[in-house]
Length: 167
Image 1 (cartoon, rainbow, N blue to C red):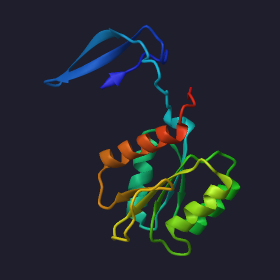
Image 2: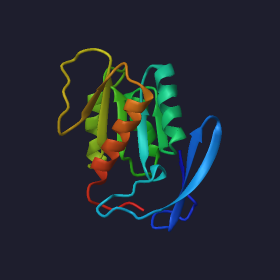
Image 3: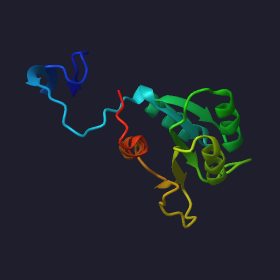
Image 4: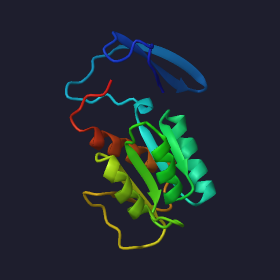
């Protein structure tokens, strides 16, 4: 577990807590940001979660909120479109079920990209639709665990950020 001292990247030190036998010790380490890294702060990103399964949507949103991402939550593709229309935030990532009522995930992605050209898309599917990752979207098969989803979200947001440094 790493706890930063609040001074942010470039600060002279941060504390690393090491848990062993239920005791926590703290040691100081010097901190130097590595060159060429993009600093990504979760609060800078808005993610749309469009999922018709209430439990899966709840778990996904809860996980992402724990990581401080800003979330737009929708029960289906049409609701996601309606909510994004009302929102003034830039949208960075769409996490959507492939099969949903009213508007499926791939059509939702196409429509959202008309206004948000740099939108990154993660299609989630429990059925084999012959989906394969492409330049337009990534695919995450169900079932998956929290670690896999969190890793995929970070990877896609970094890819979407490109060479643009984030503060």
